[in-house]
Length: 135
Ligand code: NI
Image (cartoon, helix red, strand yellow):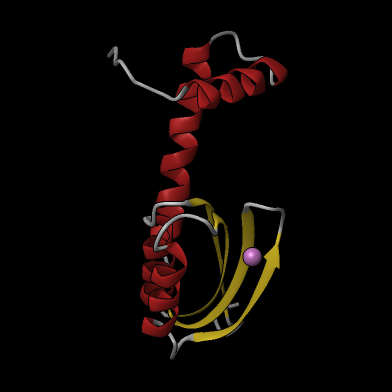
């Protein structure tokens, strides 16, 4: 199948630089690989059930209108499972936040997905681990 995709120029340039460095034969091959990784990542992320410990790492532009308030709302919504968080002012525009949660895996995932969907959030990574009981 052939698809047409519109991308911001800066994003495409960065992508092209990476596929060049990694030695892909074509942009299409790089895009296929990226989509596969996206699917694996998503499926892995959604396979989260039972009591989990989760760490959400997010990078965001604090100047984005409404974003800080929206993040605060999410932190309150999930206040019962959020154990701790750490804030680092990365540079003039960007903040890094690390949020540690402990609770039902579905709630941990929901918190990460809500943060991910906010405008101004540039990057979100969720890692989860079981609490050792199943190991
Ligand atoms: Ni900050």
